[in-house]
Image (tube, rainbow, N blue to C red; front, side):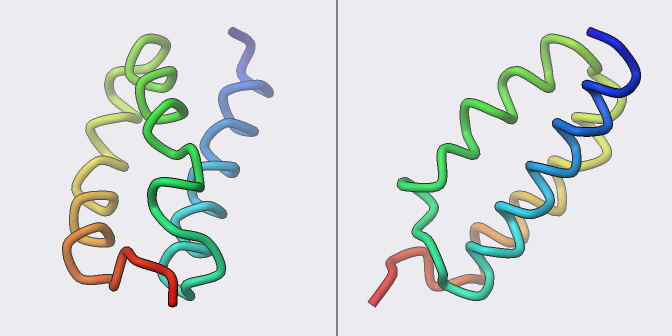
Length: 66
């Protein structure tokens, strides 16, 4: 995966996290889990950087869209 593709993947993950926080989409419907798994396969260091934010977002946000 190129540097550009990696940056695009990181941006997509962060955008989806923002959408989940603002309840535009549910955690399940966002598909963020698959993107996180893809990121872990390609860049473990970046995954380790984003994962704590992901866990915090998932635990604090109301993950069920109303």
